[in-house]
Length: 576
Image (tube, rainbow, N blue to C red; front, side, top):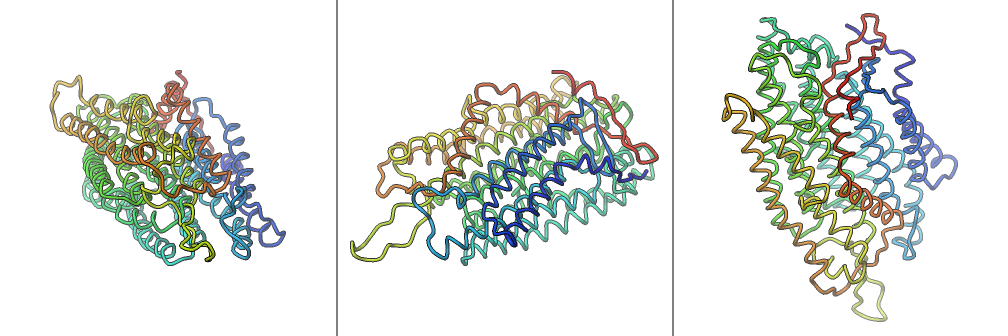
């Protein structure tokens, strides 16, 4: 079954094409027209892309054409990518909207203004690649999208910091990313060997087939395939065993780039995991062969182990950190483990249905029980994390400390440690409140968004095989243990989050901060604060959107033999 690229395919990719077009405007305008407002161009491009996504509502239908699939899941990911991209662009654009106290002077300032176009254009390419990952239903497009996320990230890391620490961070990320991409590419080759096609729908059909010959091939290739795919995805999630780069890279780069690294690659990793797990979950009623059952069983077991180890390692490492960016890097590792819980639960639920020889679960029965819970938690994590790094970017540097009144101005020092935030509530109460709220949300304190996210993940794990005759089988015991580990780790995480809040509110300041990071970073902080408060007061809207997106992730878009697009209505996605 082939997929023909048609004019309709380009219409479906209009948001991604818009982002690439805006990137070209930033590149060419900066090089030949003297453009200096590259981040302004990026914000305009993102807003136009949002309008195009809003105009592509599928009304509960799955639209497939030329390796592109537009459904509730891909639409949710697009909105998540574009909203996060707009906030990150504001964080990165401190050189465009300058505060009263300039961070640079003379030649350095002119060079920084000139480089904003290159940075903004590269950032837009990254967003286009990430959005392409969300809509791809073909292995080739999926890999291309992942590379369009990785390669611009190298460039941004090298452009933002040219000192030794910055270049070291860039090289560490570069070499490890090459390894991760190679492993994922080998996994894609194995999936092609199983399915005989690069189309994910075809691979899923063959994987679930009851044909004994296919089942034999699957049994041999699956362990190697999943191991390599998980290693490639673990790098982007900063999950064990590919987590060790995160603290060094976050510390060596700028706060804006650290915000980018802790958010956008995680979105890519979750999308890939959801697409992989959906290979074993058919949307229509029918039997799942031995290969499909083996795939789902191996998938949830591997993911559950990674989730438990990752959240524990991340939180234990964070307890030993005093550097803020290293602490947030370890926190990011722990949150990767939380995100993996929902994916493991979804795979376990699907394998349970298939293993009991019952009709295949209908689309949407996972709901917030797995994939939807992961998507909800991902959205709340993005808001809180971007908000914290936006606040740190806005606060900028500590006040200089002169050794002599007549001597030269001492070098500027960025906010680096927890002690640098001592007494922040007395000098910058809005920033202090924002950081505290974001940290409490990440810790899972009710009624903040992070609490609802962790609660949905824990409940989804406890619901596995709840009404089954085998009430305490392997799946049930493993998922209950996973929920307990999640709760224990949330308690551990509260210790280092509250340590930062204690420094902000209960310690006296010695030097204070200049709040010279730029007005736009402050705007991004306030926007994140508003979003967090909105979800706190009314989480139902995001719950419903995440639930529908998680349900749609298992929909098979069947393509017509001539490659034309097919629109398949799913009644579950239209139920409010």
